[in-house]
Length: 436
Ligand code: NDP
Image 1 (tube, rainbow, N blue to C red):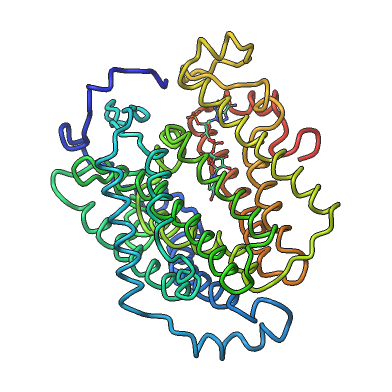
Image 2 (cartoon, helix red, strand yellow):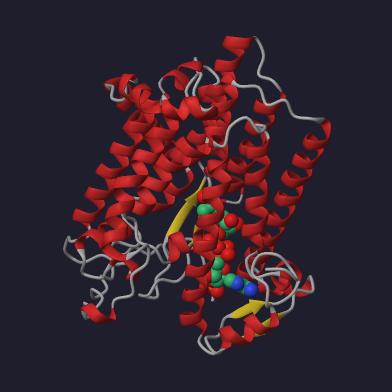
């Protein structure tokens, strides 16, 4: 169970090296993402998607069938690789690492590891967010829009290089703590899923850092670059782009303000740090999530007042559900007594852990995902209805969240055994109360 302990009791994975997990027999391996072939296909395809989407939303493109027909010639004439872009991406990651290491912040302990240890994390993400914004406010950001394809390519290469280093480093001696999903013995699959659970360079926890800092804050900076570009081209930012930037800025700020929550997520407690997370954090999130802003630089959305009101309702309704549910679970896991005083009801499980069955978590088992998705829809609707391309985000996000809900359901079924079906009978809906 998640308990508060003195922050001074720092644990490191190297102090008590755990034995490597036993190699599983081939037939008992449980693969996700389509196994090694799926991992290979994803590794090859997703960087292409990042680059194609970046180029597809460039200037005149992004609208209508002509743009789709002209995409490949346009791709061929777009400059995709440049040393400057690599310097910007690596410099940005380095700058974020310096902020992570040097800024003050409180310390928190992560979830209990298989060894019984709990790692210590320095939480200064909120301060890093504001320092980063202050730093970039002094820079000519419109160039980020112009260099977008090159920056996207550089981020893809950097994340793949990082994943290769992480994979190689996970074989060092003494063996670090490995992640169960990434230790199947299939090199390709393990490279994709990530072998090592919590790789660190000194005090820098690489997975936690990449999850929250360069890509997430970089996403907002790319949005700000789009605002600067539109102001340069049109003289003003315009309401749709201003709202997209504001709403996505709120999302990024929220992740960093509630930084501690990441310590109990599946990404940190269960998944290893491999290509999936390195690429997702450093390339996919900033360069595909900023697509709506990129689209709005060159296109007008023409949003009616009625649609605007619907968008505001989706954004703030979604945020209310997303934040409310995540905070309820955080409180429950970190300060059970206070959660109980607030009337949260729960069931006890044989594992000793409790599961909430009231409030947001009593309404639907993954209602936090629903809130998140409603916000993604609001951001896409702000681009109007001229092109399907900016709707890539909410479409992809729906697939991600459904798949993630299935992965988590599977993980919880293993974790909670017979208690999990009992919990599901008490909270029968997954995403929408009384519907799904
Ligand atoms: P959850 O926050 O839903 O965490 C899942 C874990 O919560 C389970 O493994 C279980 O772990 C615990 N849990 C499940 N049900 C209950 C319950 N009834 N009572 C108490 N604990 C419960 O999932 P994620 O970590 O995937 O996501 C966190 C947030 O991040 C979500 O809002 C999601 O939308 C967002 N997200 C955003 C992404 C993006 O790209 N923008 C990507 C992925 C996630 P245990 O019992 O061990 O505590």
